Image 1: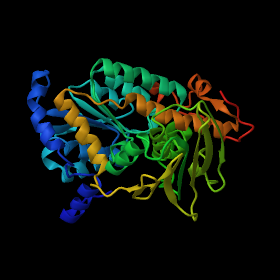
Image 2 (image 1 turned 90 degrees about the vertical axis):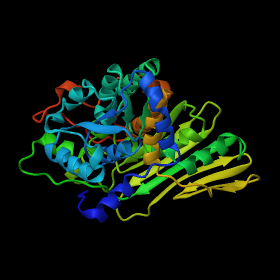
Image 3 (image 1 turned 60 degrees about the vertical axis):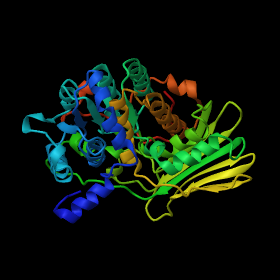
Image 4 (image 1 turned 45 degrees about the vertical axis):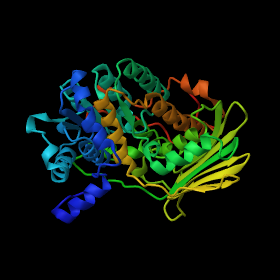
Length: 432
């Protein structure tokens, strides 16, 4: 997104949540002395790892979450993307961007240079395949973390994230995840009521998210095959985990939230690709249908598609013994004996994520989304496994899977020829 002129800057600031939400700015100021007492520098230094659109947005939000922060390092594999991000950030938050040429790192090892530096907070916003190793390295180095979703693409990656999340708690580090709906005020109010029994016992949950095609970038003659795939990472399951993991994980996270973050016993599903037939769409599906079963026999359902020319909707429906909860678009309501509709304050959930992250760092009272972000991501991975194979797969079987989709992190390079898996066929593709 190009940023030029005052009006465009205002649009960029609005989209990325430049305004500080609620009272967190006051909390941050009040916590500054406590941060010094804990041995932290007053100015919190931020390192950005992954300079695409989400990384750039997260950086703006982080820089507006606290009065005394500075972006001091940036890293990406693409020089053009890093420089574009740098110029946008410089336009949006000029007084807090302190990245000199020597601290703009390019390459697959850029994350190491940032994490091994003196930054206090790292923002992890690369394609999902890199997340487990980046998160583990950040925790090992004692950094506070903003970690975009999803946090892994396979079960071995999830196991890495869970181990690092445990260590982050032991080190009293703050970890905020990219599961942004957890920071949305209307949804917090809605799910708080659901969990307190506003619709009685939850009997079933349904999540649906249907939409059209997303962006893609045509192959350029100077690109290696690896660069082509990296620039279109969403369409390769060894980089994205397929779209159920990359995007629909938000819906599955809300499903889990409605159930008090209980884990399912097993999942059954299907999916495929009916319209994604061109090379640009790699090896991912364009639709999924998953049933999750829980210990008490409760079922939760997820339907999603990315097909052009079809109707679009995003909704969560929760059936209870005494009522029904529904989120559709921006509407949040409950019907039954305790009828309710959200009429409270709206917020920019992306900004609130960073407001609360930095307030927790200042106060010395860390927030930690580590286990939640791993389990919600694993819901999507389990669903993908069930859909790819057409088999019923238990949570335990999925968690113990040793299928590794992506290369080891030190193997990446522009000449790497990594074989993509064949497009899965339910009933033929085997569970590993």
